[in-house]
Length: 130
Length: 130
Image (cartoon, each protein chain N blue to C red):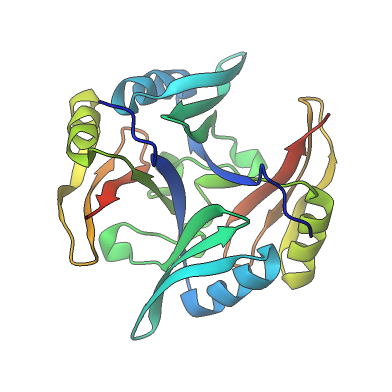
């Protein structure tokens, strides 16, 4: 397979209450909405955190798209690398995320903390230490 | 918060049998291993598909990291954008992934298919149509 300059990988988070979740991620993670498809009571949206993209979509168990609330946990963590993890962590908590691990220097060479958002997704917010 | 040129978001997939999973992703998605930390029977690895990065790690329910096998489904889809989704799809199936949706032109302007890998994670493999 030949190289493709636009190869990319973006997680799509299944959530309950997608429209509320969209507002949460805008507030908690300073996410910008790049695309938003609304239909009836559901939403599919593509968001960007300073150029780092992800999607959210209302869950649809019939299509094997399960929210963490439905399954009782999350199967993927979101590793968000930013210049100031402390500020991002505090912003997420202020918006309603719950701390799982405080931001601290880790023995594997990162400064990193972890939160669970109100929709059950887990974010590891950090940066490599100098 | 000021802009940071290295802001990035990479999913970390919780799996059972991480060492086997690592071999699978190398084969199925032509992933290169950028980092690999092994300890006892578990592994944490950072991989790249033509520059698009993700992590895999053995599950640890005590730390709220659940595999799809444990929860009976996945809470995040991985949207992989590549030049030739048909070839990537076929390669993933040949390596042991199961088709969920065949690759086809979608009415939302993408050519896209979906597979479930042997560890329960779901990949949407596609590209925007011209």
